[in-house]
Length: 379
Ligand SMILES: [Mn+2]
Image 1 (cartoon, helix red, strand yellow):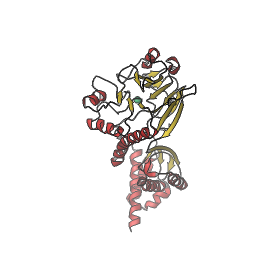
Image 2 (cartoon, rainbow, N blue to C red; image 1 turned 60 degrees about the vertical axis):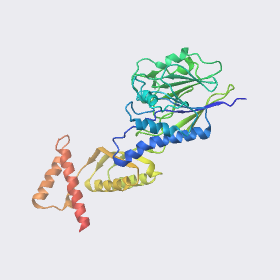
Image 3 (cartoon, rainbow, N blue to C red; image 1 turned 90 degrees about the vertical axis):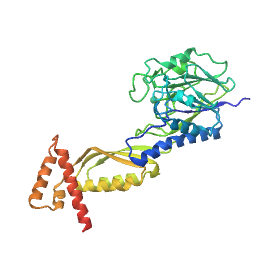
Image 4 (cartoon, rainbow, N blue to C red; image 1 turned 135 degrees about the vertical axis):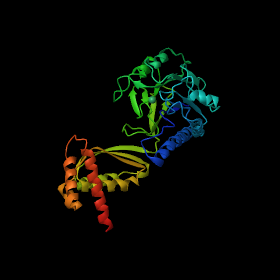
């Protein structure tokens, strides 16, 4: 009896993504990790001895990534010498000149790597497996390219797997763009055993036999279960297709909503941060809100500074956090005479809602307070 066909479904590697919002070496490590994660995928495929690895689009961040990046990617894939099928997505559309044409020109496409750059079936595994690709030839398509699957002829008895990149119509949790749409009943209409999708970065069963693999290495602050691979097994008998989620990502991107009013809230934040596992693998964004005085702000800055050194990356977004100098803060500054008058003026300005000077005055008070505290500590 023949072994059932098993594939790994992945997508959205976006190799070459810059992560410009993350400062310094932290971004470089995140960039490099995407290649390391591809190495992991190759290793998994080898260990599981799957029949093929399908990557459902956006393999590369854009068509202009360096030749060096193309070479590194192919190297990262090399541990698995079985079949790879790579599909262009909106980031790496199969334009006349693209990463795909360059991969070929540079001689980087070995026999086991199939570039799914044409809308025609790729027949593999002694005609037991047919991949039906819908490559994006430009960034945005207004037609549903997967409609072509309905008419595609494949060898009798072959497993039919659709491979596409875009938004399944009416099903994604957020309103997505109106292009690169995919009918939600495509798997039925095209008699597919499975439809392997890319574009949505979380792992998601979006319709019957239709899955988004999600990106194997998380790349943004959105809690939609990224960081996985799918292992898909096709039984020879009438048993249904089995889909197993395999954890694969290294970094975790977490966004936390934090409301602050007083000292106790800073303690609670510090406690919350200390409860996070594997801090060296964490990228954390704090969405700060509430209203605090300068003394609490000072403590907040210290806690953040301390934790910044322990997480891979930590950022506090404070556009929703109000900072008001309290009377106690002003007393703490201990100023007298004209300095005191200036501080009171700043306090008055800072308290004016919607005034263009309010933010500047706020900041001036914070700086004064900070300096005063530093001086007090030194003496
Ligand atoms: Mn995409």
